[in-house]
Length: 107
Figure 1: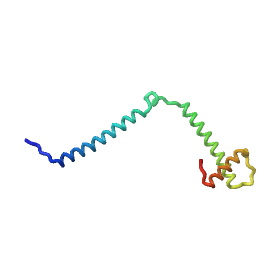
Figure 2: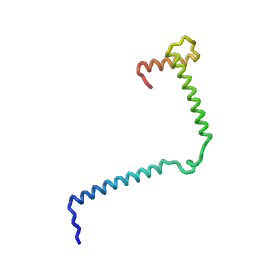
Figure 3: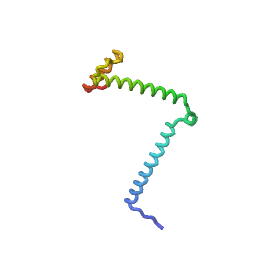
Figure 4: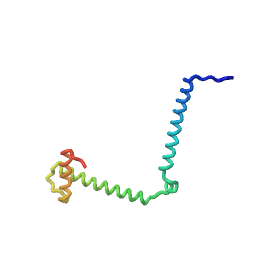
């Protein structure tokens, strides 16, 4: 029994092997990168509630600061007749930021 293959059939087999080999190499490469990047088990299993509490406190403090800045900016933009309850330096910074924004400047 003899097997005969033409040149076209050989080229098709090589193309299919190349495609399959590329997919397998991609999967293996992704798996290796995952193994290098993932945290070790002892760090994944350890829960750090203190760090979460600190992060939560920092987030709340940041939100409070943003709300105060937004109120200040709203007062400056609407030009309320109410006296500003902010420090002069902060008002200057906000007015500079408003001017820069109006001129299209960004940091």
